[in-house]
Amino acid sequence: MKRGIDDLALFGGPAAFPEPLYVGRPSTGDRSRFLERLNRALDDMWLTNGTLVREFEDRVAETAGVRNCVATCNATAALQLLYLAAGLSGEVVMPSMTYVATAHAARMAGLTPVFRDIDPATGCLDPREAEAAVTPRTAGVVGVHLWGRPAPVAELEEIGARHGLRVLFDAAHALGCTYRGRRVGGFGDAEVFSFHATKVVNSFEGGAVVTDDDGLAGHLRSLRTFGSGPGGRIERAGTNAKMTEAAAAMGLTSLEAFGEVVPHNRENHALYRAELRGVDGISIVPFDEAETSNHQYVIARIDEAGAGLHRDLLMRVLKAENVVAQRYFSPACHQVEPYRSERPVELPHTERLAEQVLALPTGPAVDAADVRRICEIVRCATASGRQVTDRERRSADPVPEVSVRR
Ligand code: T4K
Image 1 (cartoon, rainbow, N blue to C red):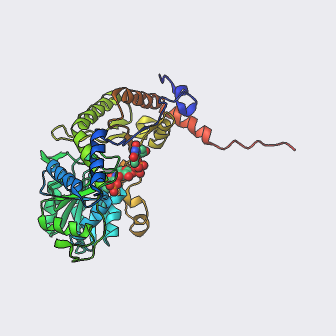
Image 2: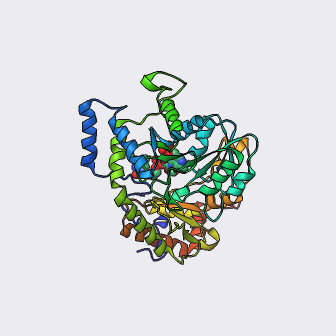
Image 3: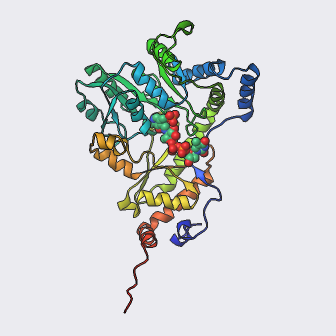
């Protein structure tokens, strides 16, 4: 029990967990099914360019309700290929409140990311901000379904139509989520999923572009595979961004577990909200009850004025207890290099959110008892937030100089 701040591990109390509890423990599914698939690839001596990747692409397309899925080695590569295949040049407008991969992929494709502010109510790109950033140099708009909460799809699609822009979505967090009852995957020109180990469905590393545009999908397949076309003929410059058979074996197995993981995540999310309801300065970012979400992230907002301690200090309090929280996403993209130096911009809503967010552990490796314990630590730390802040500050202060009388 954490009754007072002396019980906190940061100040010498026993850690709440004997082993670290992480955000983003992989959902690996039924190991025997995975090994069966891996053995098949080994028996066939077919380790890449094989049937497991094609099967995985079919399953992902089915899950997202789209015609085409082009699987890649990771989502950053998928984004980069999409920017290229969409024929963009010049500027792309995007939120800064995202993982830096959204921006870096554009930059690596020769584009200039133009960051605009979020709607503080949703954390997603504010469409009015996005439209105000459109200039003759703008080639596209990128929406990000932050933490699985859908971007303002209709508004961004309208902006695209009004200005003749490509509209793309970074759906790295949003497999299985819906927008106005429709599954994420078929919006804009194309969307990109991530299957990184920490995602709700993982393929060790992996990503995919999904789209209903057959021409765009063909172009993406070619770019992913050395620029090759039908019969393996090289028809353009391309790269090697393929997914391996081992990755697809994990992807398929993890996808089979998806149906069980989501309700578990939903329960964890609801429990966090219930346990932290009414705690000053702490709120858990909610999901729209009218939509389906995969609930893969539990995002707490820590308002220092109410909680008495800063998000970073709460993170250290938790870390001492073996609870490894993550700042998804802080700093925001416009606050890091090269963007910070090259195109300084002030985005007050983004900066405020980035200062407050903390992703808490959830997923198949985290159960209700873990969530209750984590919330107990948060309640204990925030009940005496100012004392925790003062005590930590004192312990971090250099030893005061002793004046010596001569
Ligand atoms: N767009 C968005 C909006 C994204 O969030 C991302 C990636 C992308 C695009 C690009 O997707 P990918 O190219 O990665 O497919 C992570 C991931 O590397 C990254 O995929 C993810 N988003 C981002 C939000 O988080 P880190 O540096 O926080 O992850 P890492 O590897 O330190 O793992 C976090 C925690 O997860 C660890 O403390 C422990 C646990 N973990 C991690 C791994 C890899 C495990 O328990 N097992 C594992 O195997 O970036």
